[in-house]
Length: 149
Length: 380
Image: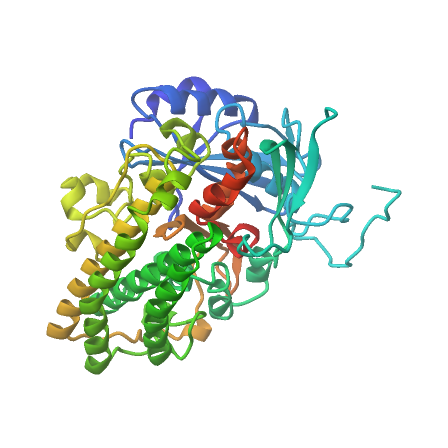
C-alpha cells in the first residue's frame, strides 16, 4: 500500500521483524486518520475488526485492526497512551462497532475513552476494584459495597 | 420512562438464550421500544489465563471459547503461534485440519438449525438435526477422544493421524447427508408458518452490518460476498493471498460462497443451509486427497519447551459465527505476553438494540435465534 498520502497525519510506519506493519499515530490525530482511511476511495477500510489493548508496563498500546471488504486488505493503526493518565478519544462516531470494544478495554485495562457517553463495565461486576488485564493487577476479589458504587 | 411502558427482564436464565444472557426490554404493549443486553455472566478470563501459562498449557483452554466449534478456536491460536515461531505445517495436516473444521462447521450449523426452529415452536427439527449431529460427534470422539473439547491440533501438526477406516466412515456420512438436508428443506423452507415468521423480520442492511462489524453468514445474508476462506473459484485473484485471505489449503479446493439478498431472518437461515452443502463438498474433496496421499503429521518440535521469538501476529479464521481473530504477542519467553480474542457473536449481541427496536415481542426469538449467538464466545 502507498502510505505517503498519510504524511499529513504525522504517521510513522513501523515494521519490526516477525510482526505486522503498523501505522503509528498520535492520539490527537487518530479520529482524522480513521475517517480518512474509511472514506477515501483508495483505502476504503470499511470494517473495524477489533481494538486490541496491550499493557507495555511503561505505557499502553492500542491497535485498531481495520479491514477492507472490497480490496481484502488490512491496516493496523497503533496508538501509544501514557499509563498515568490513560485517555484517548472515542471512535464510535466513525465505527459503531467500537462501542463494545471500548467498554471492554475500559473494563479490563481502565483506559478512558472521552466522548463515549455510556462507557460501562462490560464483563466484571459493578464496583469491582482494579483492572484485571493490567500486568500489575493483584487478584483480591475486592468489591465496593453497595453504597460506594 | 413514559407511563404505559413496561420494563421486563429476559434471562439471565432463559431456555431460549443459548447460554446466559440478560436482555432488559422496554415494552409498549407488544412492541419493543428499547433493548439493553447485559453480558458478562460467563466471563472466565480467557485472555488473562494465557499470560500465566505456557503456550502448550493454554492450548486445551481455547477449545472452551466456543464449545460448539472448538476446532476453529484451536486453529486460530495454533496458526498464530506457528506463524510467530515459523513452524511448518505439512500438507497432510492441513488437509486433516480442513476436514475436521468443515465437519465441525456442519455440526455447529445443525445444532443452530434445531434450536432456532425450537425457539419458534417447531419441536421435531431438533430431533432430526441432533440425530445427524450425533453421527459427527461420534466420529470426533473416535478420532480425538472427546465430543466437544477436542484438543486435537498441536503446534505444527496434529496429535495423531486419521485412519483409512475412519475416513470411510466419514465418506459414508457424506453420502447420506445431502438427502437429510433435502429433508430439512422440505419441511422448513416452504413451511408457511416458518416463512411468515422469518421473512422481512430482523432486516440487516449492508451498511449497518459493516458499521457494526457483523461477519460470517449474517454478513453474507445481506449480499456481501466475503469469506476469509477465499476459494479459487470466487476470486481468481492471486493478489488476495498475499494479504492474508485464504488460509490452509482452501485456495486449492473448489467451493462456492453462498449469499442471499435481503438480510432478513429467512436469508440467514437460507445461507446457513447452503453452507452445510458446501461443507459436504469440501469434506469429500479432503477425503479424496487424504486417501491418495500420505505424509508426516506429527511435528518434530518439542511442544512443551516451545519458546516463541519476539513478535506479534493476528490470525483470522472464518468460524461458523463470523470471523474469529486471535492476536498473540510474544516477548521471547515461554508464555504468551498477550492474547486477544475477537469473536463473531460479540458483535452480533451488540447490534441487538438496533435490530429489536420497534419490533414485536414474539419476533424477538426469530431475530435473536437467527443471528446464531453463543454466549461463552461473547464473554470469553
